[in-house]
Image (cartoon, rainbow, N blue to C red; front, side, top):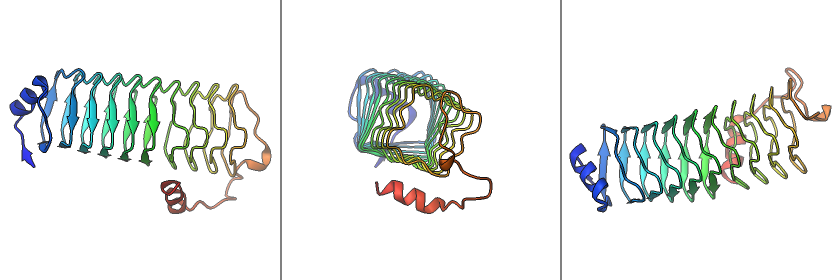
Length: 242
């Protein structure tokens, strides 16, 4: 791959020319504007993106490793057939974005707004979504074992048929969320709001549900202190193969 300088990258990005086969690493990119651009088969490593605009962009077959995105705009963007590893998104906006057919390892989203985000046929391993606005998230049948959604707004989210064993929903707003048929054993719902939440046919076993609002769980599905040993690797592998 050809490694680009900051100036070369910005020139290609803003002109809309192809980044195929190009590599960007160990740079800080600020205030870049690239609405509707297709970014294909490029590699990014340890890049800090600040206040950048990627609205409507299509990221296809890109590899992104240990990059940080701060205050970036991704509304209506598409991430397709791509690999993101140990990347962080802080205070970003991703409304109506779509993530499809890729692998996201250890992603971290903090105070990011991603209303109506669609996640389709993606492997997400040990993802952390903290205090994010994920209202109307569409993630049916997705494997998300051990992912954290702590303090997120997941009003109207669709997790039907998803693999969510060991997931953390502590203090999340799950009003009108759909977990029908989802795997939720060993999940944490402490302090969550589950008003009008659908759990029909969900696999519930050894969950934690202290101070839950809007729902009363059957005592038989609740974890008793010191009563259950958790095999984390088995949970991860079962989710990865789902």
